[in-house]
Length: 246
Image 1: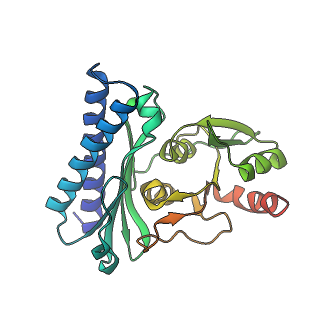
Image 2: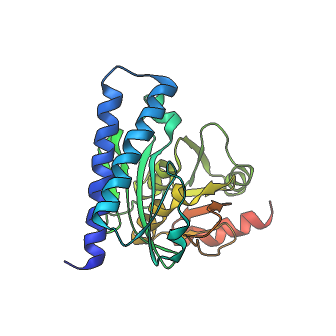
């Protein structure tokens, strides 16, 4: 087994196990609301961080729920994880939340797994599933609480249907699963919000970039990422044309 395949298998395994832990905590019936979200974040983060330190001790690590260690900036290989992407959705007992385990090599999102535990799904960069063809009327997946202005404007320009959804990972994976066709986010995210989804989407042959078309670059000192675009390659030119008129 190649190193890349081993990394992908590890990412998928960790995402799956973290998701199972989160489901067990949620299904215990002993916590609800914010305490449930906090506890889920804490437990999943501790598992992922300790497992990666054990399995890949020479690699860098960046987690939303862990104090950032600048040592990662000197590493070529950096694992970037979000233990619960969509803590609000998780705490509300919804299904549109995710677990992200991604690996960036020299800033490029090369390997990843995104678990959708409530749906029993793990999408990964080493096991490609067919992306269903787009319907005649395109669908734009947007935040269920704060749809980005640019996304709504592009949807209007393309006469696309708006599909509200929770976490960034769930929205990104909805393109692969055929639940949507374009994911455009312009409200600001962080590296852990998109590294694993970007790696999985790229492996599935989708276009992945910032909304100006430039590539996503990870393991930077400032982990803020202003925007994200995931779509089929044939839709990229029309999205860029629509953005130019926003």
